[in-house]
Picture 1 (cartoon, rainbow, N blue to C red):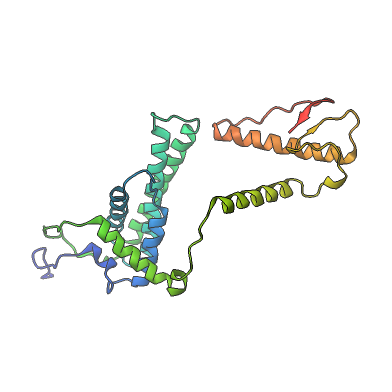
Picture 2: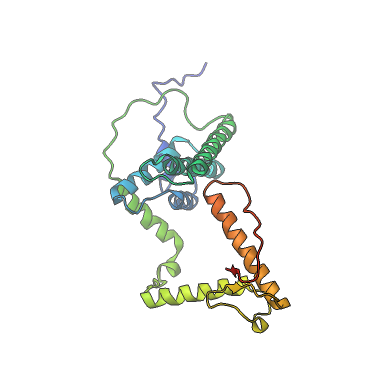
Length: 264
């Protein structure tokens, strides 16, 4: 019979994985924490203390999963990402103060993310059926020191920045002024128009309106027919996407066009 009892087993520290000299490569743990922090839903309107408390709670949850190696850390990060995705979608779907037409879709997405969270936890449990590094027995009670989530996360931000390398830290930040934003929007619009008109003979197509539409002529040329067919296809696609955003699954009705109709 083993002489190891609950009284003689040293307390197990689930936060040992975050130590610089912890049981898992600290570089891998830093990248896993960075991945988890980037996936958390942070509301820009909330205070920094609230956001840091959410980040700190996510790290506490990861430690509570007792990952033993890099693979189990990855499973834990994915499970926590699914949990926070479900929580964010529940909030969108259940927010009665600001209702929207996508509530049904958000609720369905939240339920799907919750099932993914449960599946990942079950997968981690199946993997940990083999002998664990967690000592047997219930850990002894201990006094928890008061923690400052803001200072805790500032230290982790510094640690993750150090892991990115000096070359990234020395890269100057891009300053977006109103002129640069206007130029970027103009270039984006030009690219969008070029993609929409790809393959069309725009140079020999008469009757194109400044906004990109066309009035259906009585006897359209082949170039005009091709242009209006492309515009109609884009209009049906936009209408179908808008229906999906509203939770509608039916296709838009096909409309007959006649000379004089405006094709947008």
